[in-house]
Image (cartoon, rainbow, N blue to C red; front, side, top):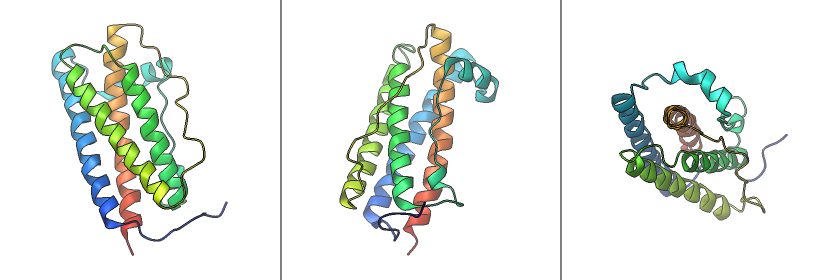
Length: 175
């Protein structure tokens, strides 16, 4: 499928705002991971991968943002959809623990702001889909341990997602 829409560089102001928002979300995610590690000894996401599969924690695709298939419209849509998915996952973690509630709330707000910024840029470029993405089925965390383990996995997956997003957005910044 050929890329549709503009493929030129994105506005510098948009990219700077994205980078700032990415840093905020990454810092929030790191704070969540560090607290879960210090408080509950859940320090190694790789040890929880099987549990993540059992819980049904989805990971958003970023295939349109990879260096092999990089296309502006598809990548922005996948970034927005991915951030929207993470909003839902973070909401599913509500009640994780009283000491983590403020960190989780901040992470959720910063992720929402980032998703809104991407959506506004898609609208500015005339590329916003007619129908916004839907959340889909979120995992049901039935125990405190599942919520905490889910928090580690969601924060870790979000960090990986943001690293790919960062590389893609930097590519689009090049004239």
